[in-house]
Image (cartoon, rainbow, N blue to C red; front, side, top):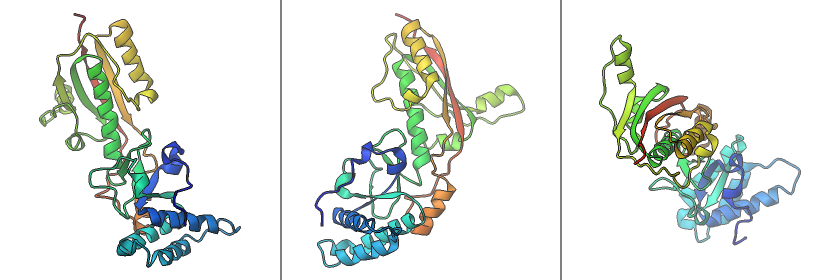
Length: 283
């Protein structure tokens, strides 16, 4: 049995190849990789279920015997997922230590989905959309605060709104729920999700480790306007359009394979929130 994975570094792999993972004991992953290499030598398609059964037999009586019941079920679920066409990678626990998972994770048998822009970050399939949107929204807020915003108002345009916003951990206070009547003014107030007043700064900077920013030309335009031309007011949009293939179909496939979702699945909803406000004037 090999002592080290022959697979290239996970973080350097294309997103489609590293998107879906489960975490298993190192010895089990190495045994499965060895079996896969052997099976690939023939011209026949790999029988994933047979491969998993062979690995379980190989591992019986080894140092992981005390884990084999839970691990065997997780490995068989992985094999069923592969047999159904899902490109789920098995990751050893040692390799997983270099990745970032939610608190209390990783756990055997749970399917994790990689962040589309941060190769080291993985979420449960259940919370993927909420966490990915929260990260994008938080980055937009962080950008505006570093650029010297003194006022930030977040308004719902479409998609997830007040109930969803209440689940997010952001640096802005939620607005109290306002009942809308027929007037456009009341409707506008009801769409207001967050509102904050800050001291601001007349010396704008860009935060470190921006990831969504690189793909958002309008965000870049706001930053350029502020840093190079003294922009005093802003309107910035946070769009969340792509479901990244994490949808009801993937949920159903994972369930049929016997993989855990890691909670109650939150489906994708195309969402647009706008952030308006003012920047600090020069001192």
